[in-house]
Image (tube, rainbow, N blue to C red; front, side, top):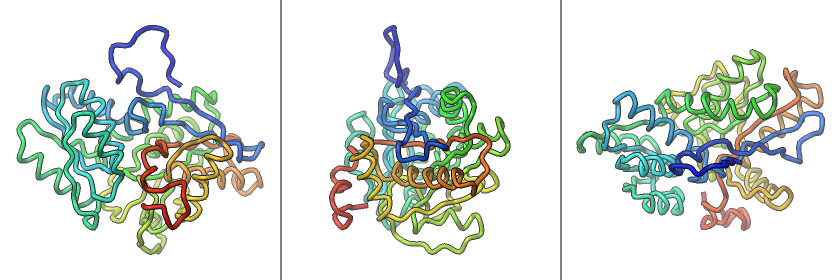
Length: 326
């Protein structure tokens, strides 16, 4: 948890230094640790890229002082950008597919941002196209484009990864994270492989997502309820590098829903579906390592819990599976 003994100048100064907590369901021989990103001021991992990308773009001149950022986002990135933009004198406009969390969109507006909805059936590709159209119509507007901007994984290479490795004295055997933009996993993987080339890297996606095709697997496209990770068009996920990933694991919605409820009831983690999918994949890596099926450089697995379940309560995350709205 971020701790400060002196007053801070701005809420953006509280981004990062989130807790790393053991998942108790993991084997004693190979513990799993989760980075709890809901402790950020905007309550998600996307606060990191919001702060880092805007500060870097202002410093380089790519974003003019007092300019506008227009970003396609499923929600948390919008909140992260809005928290930072609010304090940096930047206007924020977000393009969000209709089906995504009402809570997230409400929070973006509360932070002073404008939200533009696009049809659910157009996916993130449609949101990306609309964001670029809007940027062309506005003065001093840029699209940070979290799906392709190298500042996204760089934010995690510079902040998230060092925090993890400092906490575990550089002894990290495997890194496991869900891929939406893939920025979190790519930043962690690059940092980890520099410290030990045999670091095992697992990408996580829902069943129905298509990242696995980048590893040559003939997976079928389908709808999924898990939110914030996965892709229906890998061509838009330019940051993902299949060469630094050992495996791409698909987790079904039923399993994810059950794990969300288990994490809350048994371990006190009020986390959302992407966290639950990450937990299941990380626990599987740890169990295989403990059984001698995987040879990790160190006996530890690290994953990320990107946000809190509170953002999805209106979608019935803690009801039965049929009542859960993805």
